[in-house]
Amino acid sequence: MEKDRIQEKDYRYKIANREALIGIGLVVFNFIWWFAFAYRLGSKDPSEYSYVFGLPSWFFYSCVLGIVVMAVLVFIVVKLFFKDVPFEDEELEDK
Amino acid sequence: MNWQATITLFGSVAIIFLIGLIASRSQKTNNSFMQEYYLGGRSLGGFVLAMTMTATYGSASSFIGGPGAAYNEGLGWVLLSVTQVATGYFTLMILGKKFAIVTRKYKAVTLVDYLKERYQSKWVVLLSAFSIIIFLFSAMAAQWIGGGRLIESLTGLSYTSSLFIFVITVLIYVTFGGFRAVTITDAIQGSIMFIGTLVLLIAVIIAGGGLPAIITDLQAENPNLITPFGAEGTLTPAYVSSYWILVGVGVVALPQVAVRAMSYKNTRSFHRALIIGTIVVGFIMLNMHLIGVFARPILPGIEVGDTVMPLIALEVLPPWLAGIVLAAPLAAIMSTVDSLLLLVSSTIVKDVYINYINPNAVRKKVQRLSMGVTAVLGVIVFLMAVNPPDLIIWLNLFAIGGLEAAFIWPIVMGLYWDRGNKYGAIASMAVGVTSYIIFQTFYPDPLGMHTVVLSILLAFIAYVGFSLGTEKKQIHV
Picture 1 (cartoon, chains in turn green, orange):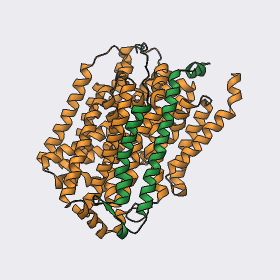
Picture 2 (cartoon, one colour):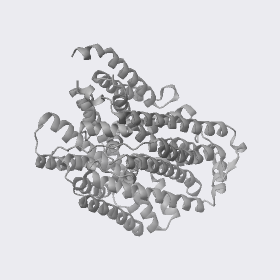
Picture 3 (cartoon, chains in turn red, cyan):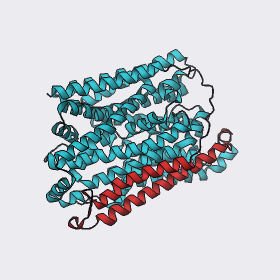
Picture 4 (cartoon, chains in turn yellow, orange):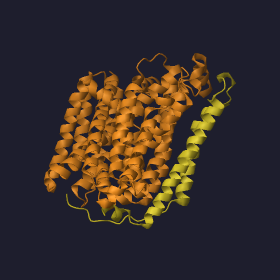
């Protein structure tokens, strides 16, 4: 059957599947970080806010620092856990 | 009319396009016309891949509408918008290597190609081609209206002439350049957006008298502007969180994004794109929406949200620089339109014409047809944008959520779950789109979350349910 031919075990799939799981892990972490700082620190009355670099602290930690942290995490994860795999060059039909 | 700004605006756009065209001409390959015109010969490097993802997704909706919404809602809207940082890494990681490997095996050039090979079903192909044409066509018309308005507000020309200028540029470019030219342009546009938003943000902060002063002004006007809950306190945590699905995770399913995830050269480019993409998307989204919020104390009382970006740029920057910085949103709209146009044209030519009407078309014919269809589509969209029919505006409201509800499970489960079959895919698409349109019309934002969340959930149940329920039948066939 066509489907079996394509889904046949290819060692590259294992790598791809693992990297997709890492992606899910990262997005869950990102969400928790974002949500926790925004609504923990941001749910007070605005007059009680503390400030970091002139921005309300909930915003600074959740949005500004959150993006920096994600960028660093993605960098580390890609460098440490992502593997290079070959894409064979297939003949391309002349259409 | 602001001559200096107008000249630098069009000058920048012209230079961007020239570079794109020259670069795409200089890279002749032996690839088939299809691979080349619609996929750039699968040879994108890391930087170009990251930038083209950013420019395609983070465009008009966020570039023109976003700062306007942030202007009205305050920091709460910025909180909502940074959920898009997930698109920088999540989309590529999920589709990732598997999508690139599988689409190469299938020799798939479009998203529909992939679905066709994966599910081996004419109905999956026709349903998905239909959703792409309907939804993307309406999305495109809305973008053209946005582009026309931007040129109109900056130059003072009439809307129709502005639109005409916009359309001519886009059409010439896409018709002759194809995918590679579009992606190279995207890379330059992404860079302009990156630098442009930074320059504008700094200028706005200086004009507002520094960060603490701006925040104090905002708080004095309405304390809610500096909370996560929006100007009226209406942005609930559940609602804002549901944007993780709409503009973060769900973006995996947008055909214009998915097609880019199969076009990169090798895994090294892919790894670089992940890193660059995350930084660039995060940076642009944060800056752009902050500009909208910070513009409020400087230019109070702007009525039309869409004009916040052009007005604040003209206010805080010298006119020539404002022109260059505004080339970024204009470029963003153009690049979105470019890719949508290519996508709709590839759906018609490749997925419908070659699949079902004339499978033996020769290269010359396909080439002429592709360019012809692209040009004709452009003219139709222009006519619609001059005097937009209500239907288009209505459909555009459903475009992003509708596409996500239709495609997310057929794509993702198709890649990672071997037991998913064509019945699951068809059911999932039908349930996703219908439930999305019905809920959005009659019962928007169920449970305080964006409608897309519930539709995607229902589509998932349909996919798994129908795949498992029809499994026996499959084996006997």
